Length: 282
Image (tube, rainbow, N blue to C red):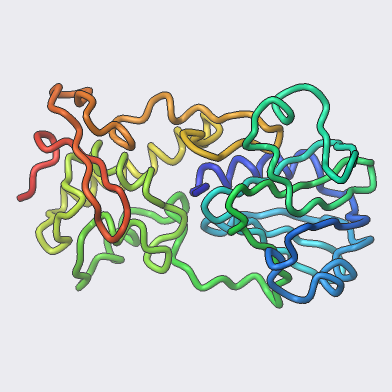
């Protein structure tokens, strides 16, 4: 699933490309990916509206149109936005030679929105879990942004909290934008076991989590996200964070610090990766 760095990468690129442009039409072969209003009403609301701003909130993309229209896009597990100029040939969208046509992950187009300059903004999603909807306002009930919060406010989030640290970091109502990949990497750098109870962590542990959280998220944004699985940039290209990951999906491989084999177990239904030597429980 695209997490904070991937969504931030998309938003930053879209800001450079489509602010000031207008949506002119919409095509979809999977109407249930447009959650509200109906596809016809959704199309009417966004058509001939100018794009005035684009923001990220957690894992959500917010596209602000004139007339107060706010379009929310959540890419879910395998979705990603693409920006290019396709041709509709033999009932399918065809891209010019390049990353868009050569990478199959860019070929699952289920919503395509035309722009007034002849390009299209497309949502590619192999699993069809992604969604678009029109919001009444931009108040999304999720936790604070990890790159905007200061340490004191971050520390306060844990007051009187109970539970396992990795699950808390992945709880979007607790803190927004962190998922399985980055929670695993943050805790590895912090030398904290994913199942460690929050009540057993000391001040130094929280300082390390905060420092490594901000470092890893910023580093991934610099590298344009993680493309271990489905994520691609709006140009159809892979990001680079997967090239420097230390533990995520590295089970059976030697730890970069101590050479102990990375292990995997399920926590809350999610695959969790850690070094049993570097990340011992207290």
